[in-house]
Picture 1 (cartoon, helix red, strand yellow):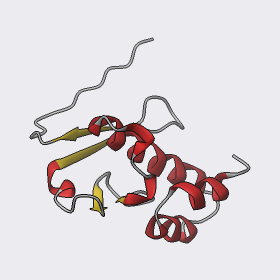
Picture 2: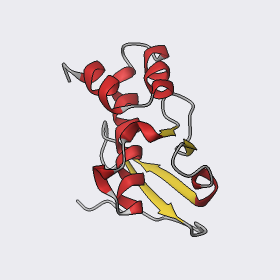
Picture 3: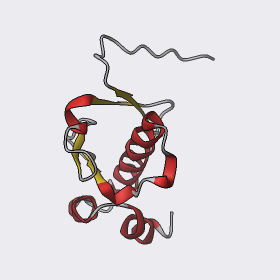
Length: 113
């Protein structure tokens, strides 16, 4: 993705952009898509789409980071009420699911041939 850094500057929070810059070049595209899918999942779970600025909240991403909402500048209680779950739909791809105001017992995925 040739314009990954430009997209991150336009869509990620300053903290997320700074985090992305700390990730080694070889791992950066994967980390970028982790962040993007987690941010997208969160907005879809809220039902607000892109009417809410992507830089109004921070998600965890990158090597060694589990999927989670770190901060919300719109509603500081959101990190406690949102579960972010990451998954790999196929080798080399990333996905995420967000669940708002519910206890996550178990999420199952299946692979079809």
